[in-house]
Amino acid sequence: MPRSRFPSLVLTALLLLATATRGHCAPSEPAAWRGDVRFLLAAIDSIHPRPYKFFKRAQWDSAAADLEARLPGLRAEQGIAALSQLVGRLRDGHSRLDQLALPNHGRPALQPLPWPGFDTAYPIDLEVFADGLWVVGATAAHADLTGAHVVAIDGRPVADAVAALAPFIPSDNAMWTLRALPTYLACPGYLAAAGLASSTSALLRLTLASAKGAKRDATIAAAKPDSSAQWLAADRDVRAPLPFAFVDLDDSTVYARIQAIVSEQGHEGLPAFTARLFAHMDSLGTPRLVLDLRGNGGGNGYLNQPLVHAVLRRPALDRTGRLFVITDRGTFSAATQLTADLERETHAVFVGEPTGAAPDSPGDPAKVRLPASGIVVRISSVQWNGSDPRDPRAFIAPDVPARPTFADWMAHRDPAIDAIAKYRVPADLRDVPPNQHWGSRAKIEAVAPSIAW
Image 1 (cartoon, rainbow, N blue to C red):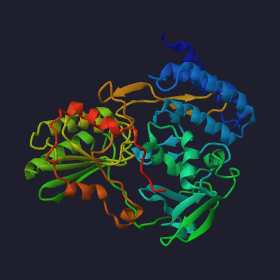
Image 2 (image 1 turned 180 degrees about the horizontal axis):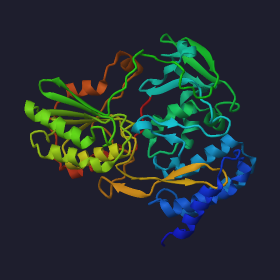
Image 3 (image 1 turned 180 degrees about the vertical axis):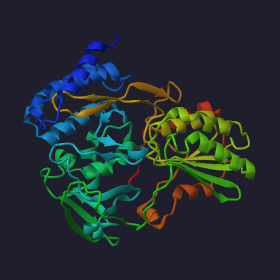
Image 4 (image 1 turned 60 degrees about the vertical axis):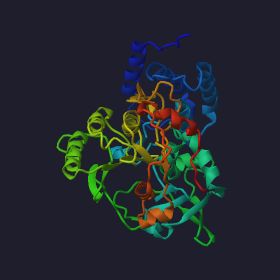
């Protein structure tokens, strides 16, 4: 039975009305947002290419009716989190509240909203490593916390805290949840909604452990964003990498870092960088290439083709053990498309972590402003298919897993590069055509991220 479509002309009129009537008035409360829920559902039904892939229409209607009934009794932070959770039913990292941005296609960041708990943030920077959650940065006032291992939040083990926050983080998979997690952990509104803080004005309560296992408690007050604040990194090394760069690792290997899939006027774009990279490789006769897509939040997927074609024009490179691709939870959107293209067309060996998006996933989100709350929601409008139509994977998993520990990060050791240096082509490796590689990796699609919380 075909799904019911909200008439496009009516939806367009509603979107225009919502935009025109939402001015600079004071933020409303959830009791006034009940109409936003049905408006959001209608927009998802009209715009998203696969709204009922994971939940049937009746289940969406039931979830919406439940939220409508609960909204009058919710605080603002609970209502915002509930809307984010509703959008998260799409299991699509592109469809989310617009407050979650990817500046320069990089690390996710929550933009301020005009409600208590969303206009402030805890001034620390957290990151998830193979051995748990660590403080990797903080303002100067909290410099003593940098390098600390977090074992509990508001008295709850970190694994429980992550499970409480995860429903509010729309994602394709658990890897993208981990990627976005640090910015949500620094948001008083989401912590209060998850029951990890008593209110949006409460102190952040962390339990920290030393290398010898001794524990101590720390409390941190939220603050308004301050661009003049001095931040300190745990490793005391502030790096601002260029979007594209390459270097010779040794006489036979070139390493290329691709931070975004972009081509902006006045700057070198990915196609131009590709031409420069392969001209360099050809001049050296280099038989090995490492493409590092870690932390690459995407951009314009149409720019990927020259790079893939450049590999295919070099049969000596397109062989197992000659071409390596490093991915992690931050490999998202157009960068996951590039990963899927390389998996489908080449004999690349993948190293690192699973990608933050699925090889077949929606994108190109349209922005919709909810009329009562004024909250802006992104809704994917295009289904991108970079793999086989039967591919069930929520991410592209590596052939060679390599996840850094906090000690690796502090020492600037790179387990992925180390794994590539040690890689040897298996003697019993079967010659599988690239367009069938997805099948051999589908078996581990359901493996949960291995984090020693």
